[in-house]
Length: 235
Image 1 (cartoon, one colour):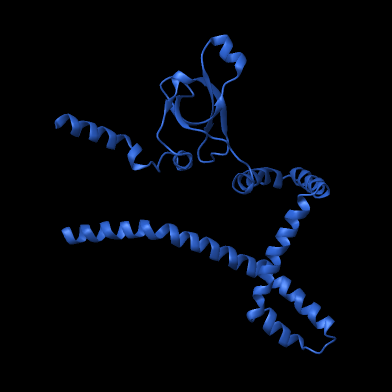
Image 2 (cartoon, rainbow, N blue to C red):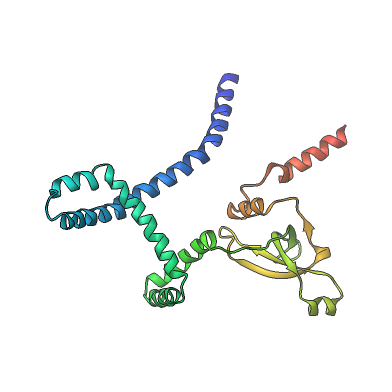
């Protein structure tokens, strides 16, 4: 029985160590396969037509297809697609590009089915890809949305001067992320004395929110804290 238990323990431990790496590689491989099968192949077919036209028939279409579409030359389409994305990004950085893209997005927003999906997809991609610096300072726990219910929040700054002067208290402006999409949430101001500073990093707090509390660092797990406290009392 002990051997079986050790085998299961070691298997889970090894799986936990290897799974993130395997999934990361799988995601990149799938992205490469998708680009190759859905985008690069059409670029390479276009290259075959262009080279055939430029060479005035000196190269047969079968030979060009065997090299550029089915052979080692097919990687060219992948790099052309990457460069194309870079050029699109450079174009969208201009005033004309931003204007045209805004018109295009507004047109999408008016389509019956797409307008229900596109804004949410854009929100997710903007959160991960947009070049924005979110100035989160500390991680705190606050009683929100009501007394006795605690939420993890990210401190973004101090409260408004008018509010602090009126109540004669020091306030903190915090962002309360929602699960499972932490890029949406609520911005509230709470008295600083009513917040509890948590020894958590911003990344740990976001993982905690995204996983709906499932992923909790070991040092922050309540049962471990209670166990350590009881062990100290017994000693």
